[in-house]
Image (cartoon, rainbow, N blue to C red; front, side):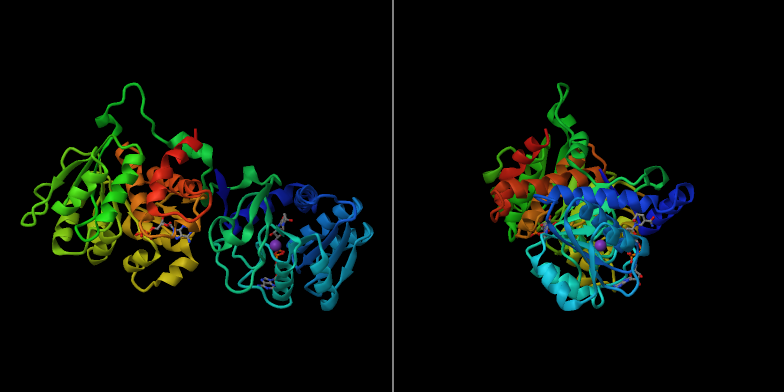
Length: 488
Ligand SMILES: NC(=O)C1=CN([C@@H]2O[C@H](COP(=O)(O)OP(=O)(O)OC[C@H]3O[C@@H](n4cnc5c(N)ncnc54)[C@H](O)[C@@H]3O)[C@@H](O)[C@H]2O)[C@@H](O)CC1
Ligand SMILES: Nc1ncnc2c1ncn2[C@@H]1O[C@H](COP(=O)(O)OP(=O)(O)O)[C@@H](O)[C@H]1O
Ligand SMILES: [K+]
């Protein structure tokens, strides 16, 4: 797991350690770790051209002390000062090691253009809002340069707590972060600015509270995933019921059913209109299907199942409303996606009053329907806050899709999925996800774990499907087995 902490938690832990140890010790640990990563990234430290972008706070101090270490190993280090006052000890250390200092704009621009490495020490966890001048101009020069950009603690201009980017911000190739990850390094748009993450241990661990946000790695998923054992049979592996697709949107049924089958469901019981049942059986003959009567849409719904998936391509007609109420009236785990979420916005108490496990999987537009007064752009800019709020308001698990999928549940740290990729931004991939998570729910995983495993495999499958080339939702289905294999 990658564990991320709020800025307040990091500062509190730092205060405890600083009160205990010699002055400046933490910054020295941070600077030593930062310099070591920089040295590793450079083909040769001796003679390398290094430019430090130095802001007024301790983030600039880290950069200066690290720069001094590189200068002592023979790098040509120039500190570009973005403020009148910068960390005095760091500045003295850099000068003593033979580093140069400049506050001249033209000088800075030329040096950044010619640099091998730019170290972004403009702002760390003390940054607020987008970069002001001259910080913004320096960030723009770094973006224009061919130099490798290493951010100190986090890319300047990214909000450490949320990943929000309100204006200009540094785009780093590598971010060297201290003591613990920050949520803004794991959540877009901030995550997209951070590049590869390197964590430097400065001894905060014992003083940190439980994580605010967690990001699972391959081993965490492998440990959670259910697998068939010698005792398994199709019922014990989990029977999933699906109410997805319609005669109009039959593809949603075919894709969501496919996601569940590839996800390892023991048996899949599908119910729908006659035309869509025929298409599902044509593609997936292993499905046990029921044709629902238009006059009584709930009479034929599957019984004796372990979990339900409702919604993808199902429609918003009155029969879909009756069906949704019926499924939510059971005591079974239920995943609601797409049209079911739109319907839920009209009758939110269907979930609020429910005590059985419930998982909502909205994209930003669907979540906006559930949270009156919030629009899609707000949600995309502050994904963590909105997913967390929705989970609290509905008293259930919420998986917010899109760039950085977030899984929130009341009283638990939020989870961010690390495998997502914009390759997934194509029609039908959400249907596959609903099925994949449904299979995990039917196997007995709790909604949060089911969502975490499903989202991880989904992103991994997208990356593996066509070797990074564009994919269709059908390609994604085909790559799910490879994603499972990659975790073994
Ligand atoms: N506290 C500690 O013990 C440690 C702190 N460390 C470093 O210290 C950093 C935090 O240092 P600080 O609290 O001094 O804060 P920062 O260095 O992050 O920056 C705060 C300064 O930037 C200015 N500023 C804020 N937003 C701005 C914006 N949008 N545009 C331009 N200027 C802006 C503020 O006026 C303030 O002076 C961490 O990120 C980390 O790099 C590390 O050395 C490890 C130990
Ligand atoms: N920019 C993006 N980066 C990463 N993943 C994305 C991006 N855009 C969409 N996705 C993912 O693609 C899937 C799309 O789901 P959804 O919006 O429900 O589409 P559909 O209804 O067409 O299936 C989700 O898993 C979502 O997280
Ligand atoms: K920084």
